[in-house]
Length: 536
Figure 1 (cartoon, one colour):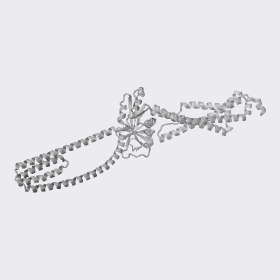
Figure 2 (figure 1 turned 90 degrees about the vertical axis):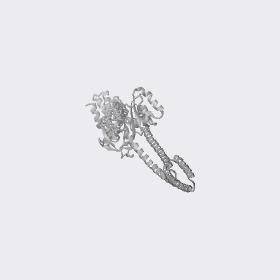
Figure 3 (figure 1 turned 30 degrees about the horizontal axis):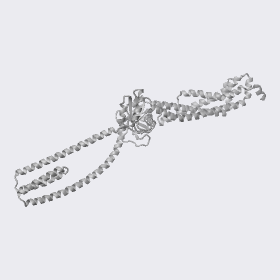
Figure 4 (figure 1 turned 135 degrees about the vertical axis):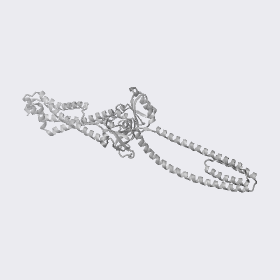
């Protein structure tokens, strides 16, 4: 008979007490294992997602929010920045690589990221099928997106405005999947990646739609104003024509009662007045023609009536023809200037649109470690942009997360301490009930050390059963959480992982079991066999 078998037989004599002690130890152990696995993989994932990203440049706001939105795509961006402002730092010699990102839409909760092919290279991703995008409205999806949404090469989908489901769907401009990425274990698995131009085109079309609606409203208003203006101009023209007819009638009557010389002088004065009126009012060209026609008829009647020579009549017609050519030339010149101004307005608008192009963030990789000492400070000093280092902000995030994990760890160790006290109470209580049994063992040849060893083995057995059950439960729970995260959030984690700190945990839990049995073992060592048998 060995001491281990004897200890197991003794534990089966009180199954309820044994089960409670094992369960308490298992709950404490499982809690600690779950926290260790989750914390280790969370830190590993965050470090892997921020790999080779030394600096993130974005809009003014919270640095943590900027990092969470641009690197981990787990928060709303603080805003957009001008591409022209970011270009200055993209061209800086201290920058080895600069990757622009343009955010704003999502598909079933997965972010749509407008960027360059360098973003895919940043995570050393490979294509499982298809190719990278080469035209607008072509997209490449991560492995988690392809699995959750059942997308493949050739599939089409429409993005939605915002980062949560339920936003305005851009169903008039669907994306076409041209590639599916192999799993990388990074944030890229949970993204839809496309070109910057695709994101700009979608948002520009939304802006243009709203602008066209306002423009149509203004155009209707302008047409109404033009109609009123034309009506008013027509009334003025009619009044002026009536006045001209009246003047012609009075003038004709006057000519019939004067001599030929006086009639000729009157005719020259009216022609001079008419030329001055044509030079000052080119916009009423139609009215001038009407006035010329009426005046020419009057000239002809006057010449036939008074007997002027044909040479004088030809000279006057030539002067009238030259005047009309001069008016037409001025009209064409004004039209040319108007067209030139119109074209310049279009070019200015296109230039303004290019300057207004925005991105959400810029991911920068330093050319040398020395850039970390000067580049972030210079960007922040400029005032327009915010520069944040992922390493520093991740440390802050983990510190904040670590506070909660420390509290949970403390609670788990409380459960372990409770289990240790329960083991101690069970062994110490059984020691008083088994004093006679221990005395008989001494009579059968067992030494004091062997009796102490016997009780320590019993405490260790309780600890081993509780720790084994706790480790198994902790890994199973972690795998369940990992499956849930993979299906709902696309986060790659696993429960079948051995964290280095688990080895220390295992040794510590065994030590707790030994300590809990140490006092009862010491009492067994000091047992007086003669007195115990006499009292029995």
